[in-house]
Image (tube, rainbow, N blue to C red; front, side, top):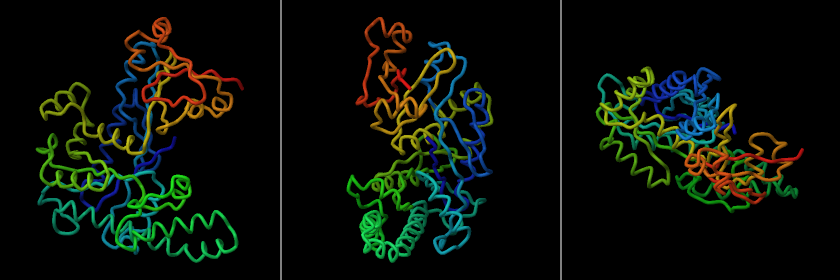
Length: 365
């Protein structure tokens, strides 16, 4: 699955520093966690997954292949972006192409780093971003309405559905609220996504704090976290400056540095995992002598759908999925031990794959 998260923020909030830390981390882990730069501002990183190490050890795998997620360092937003100010058009187009947004809020004071608005107020920063996204959505829908109305009158069922959903989204937008504040009918989920509205994308609030606040956060990050909870979003506290330093260290030095800061792992690991979870994704594994690999599926995916992530032929010819829970796989020393203990199950077409399942598909092409 090609998954993209846009890193969004005002200028000088630490957005690019955060992106650079992500890419440096990926490069440093290239032996086990491949990284590629698709464009100067697009980076593909591994989803941190400690379970893969256990699987590889037990299965004696030669290679470890993690799930991946793509981050896009979007051009800095300024007030008026929806009307083309700054790099507004590029900014909005890049976000529209992504599945979710990571909203970076400046939660640190530093007289040497000028804020574009002349003050440090992360909640106001978030309001500016949200306002620009709402204006863009509002203008986009209003431009489309005449054509949709004309097609709907001509008995175009798809246009009629799009028109109904556009009207549903316009109501909150005209009232100054994001389109995510309304819930479309379940049967219209796909058509709702096709509207490509910026304010319906899942959001992760990233609190960029000073070095001293990397462990527990500060008053500014607490305010952002409270805002995230109110908006039904998630939040994570990170010091982009520290993450850049950590990314350049050797593994042993990295562990020592984290210990001095009272951190168990880099903040970027939490951010990547939160972004992955934000998209409603889960992981299943395959393990063998050749490789131990993590595969990405949406929550609720069935056995055939999970098989199709590997190859469409696997889904078409699906017979069954030989399934072992991760905990059983590790506790019993792999497939043979799980089979002997009766913990290997044969699951059919209706089985909903669980996070951490170790699977082997049987299929007929």
